[in-house]
Length: 340
Ligand code: TXA
Ligand code: MG
Image (tube, rainbow, N blue to C red; front, side, top):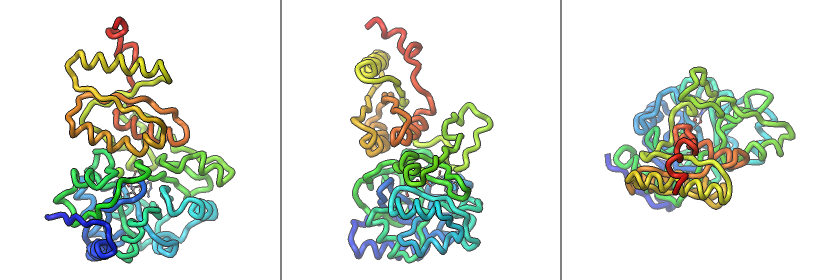
């Protein structure tokens, strides 16, 4: 299949909307990461998403809407807490898990009784949903297991020839996926940390949101690892290079990184260091940097651990997954470089 590369214009958004209406697949920008969209209410169209991504069939989609009216198509069980959070954070990078209405196809929700819904703030995404005239099911537009794409070029790296079209928008401003919040019970539970943080949510509600405990377990060595969000159990975001996370702060951290870097260079490896000024920059650039360095054929990527609070916790969740949950044991990894 030839993938149509559509620049963002009113006319092209209409074309893309018609493709979705007709049961096709369109990749499009959102403020978080690029999505791979299909008509959420059309099971055949949604089946194409799983196929294009090579995605396990028990991993549900996020359904994107552009207007509150569309929420009524998907769920009739939206409590006051959920409404307050929607009013505060929508349109924006947070997804709510709600009880689904019967008419939402099981394939869209991976067989679950709940549906995840998000109203993106990105103007192109919202215009596309309006043009399609249906809610759009859209996971991140990458092949399952590779880093989420945050620009049109990275989408094409994975999806060129596998989908009908892409809206070639700008790079994503947020750079990591939305926060996923379960609001089906009395207490909100964070299933996936994102740009909207626990601190942001607590401030609005005046009660404390819980994290799904599974978020802080290593699925690779825990047989009882059962996250409430199916997507969190898969190894994700892996670059081809070996990613090394180094803990520490300030000067000590820089020295540690330098020593580990020298050690790998001595082994003849091609090494790059990813160092970010702040959490926002880390969120914006981490996925794109992994892809860039993979294209360069780098063997080892070294990056600093982020403090696990606020946005740092969300980015660190991605960094840990990308590194297969391993943090460098400095003493062990660096015994032979202490003398340098
Ligand atoms: O920012 C985002 O959320 C992006 C853009 C495109 O909107 N989308 C995205 O979709 O990240 P995806 O499919 O890559 O991740 C969706 C996550 C998965 O971990 C999935 O398991 C979870 O949301 N999810 C979807 N429906 C769910 C449900 N009903 N219950 C629990 N988790 C759900
Ligand atoms: Mg994804």
